Image (cartoon, rainbow, N blue to C red; front, side, top):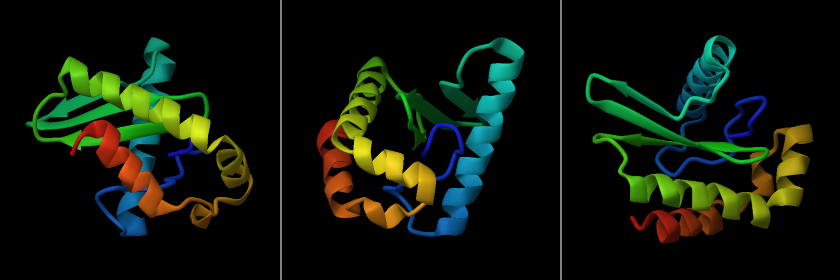
Length: 120
């Protein structure tokens, strides 16, 4: 999702835009709240056995929804993924910030990248 607006760019799990927008909005609100009270970024949430692990880049962030806590290896791969995503799609991310057009991104290509790095 775009870092400042929280608008979803792509989802590996769901094509339902309403679900994506709700999850992105929730994460953006939580991130904003935590930044305001603690001065840091939201990195993980644990609620009743439901885990969300976040990773941040310069202009995007990602969230991984899990049934178990993320181990160190997964956290490192998420950071690698966000770095590579921003490197490969820097121009498209900038265009997305202006337009909100998710069609700028080739979802099949990005999902392949996600599977390759996260090792799903």
